[in-house]
Image (cartoon, rainbow, N blue to C red; front, side, top):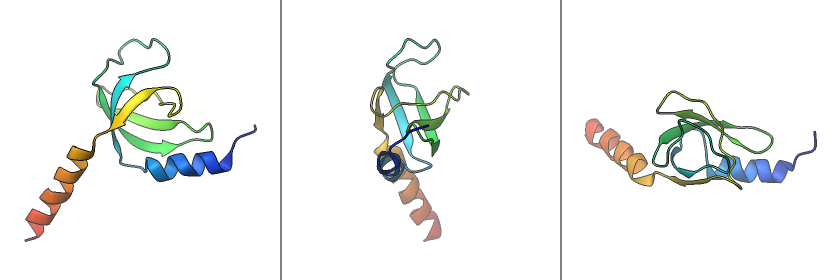
Length: 88
């Protein structure tokens, strides 16, 4: 299989494991995957596709160059702040 290693590495760097994602829309019509659904990145494969664990229990991957989604930065920042507060 031919794949672009540099593209895979860029996707891994941009969406590391643990990144929270909000789905805006898929490139295909997949039942049970509505806009607004959130999930967590659990890895990146050689396509590169984001391997996901969705909050609805699904494991459908995202194609970062075809699907529409956004990173949920607010939740990540809140989790970090909560961790700091608990340490104080």
